[in-house]
Image (tube, helix red, strand yellow):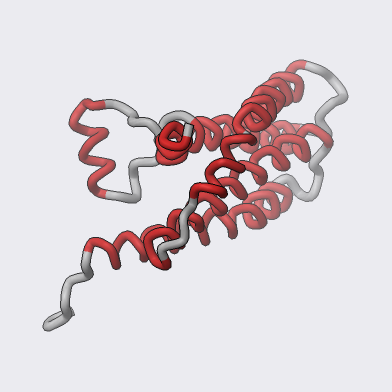
Length: 172
């Protein structure tokens, strides 16, 4: 837009974090609804288990990014939220293992999945669970939405520690 003032780095970060937490929050509802719809409503226990784990990790993401936003925008310390999320690390690791096992079970154990669509819902939700766990509690996997992150990844420096992991270690 001609004549517009460029955003300050702080304003740009506030805008990005506002989008992050809202996207994660909306995905808590949208992902399982879309998966269930695409499966024709035929989802079984394995899909429900993996979607629940995926939803929990999306909620963790929404809570974390909102806490970080409130820190930058309002000066509210995110430390108590980060401590609570740190307590969930092992539980979410366990949920990710269960999600992975559910995927294997869906494809190898007859009668556990309602059909092929249910197997695919289990697979997608299970994979997203594992990836979200890694993305939040260990290594930042998402690099496509921020130019600086993309450039860093493409420079060959690999995946960096996730923001949540850095914050957990800072408080540890």
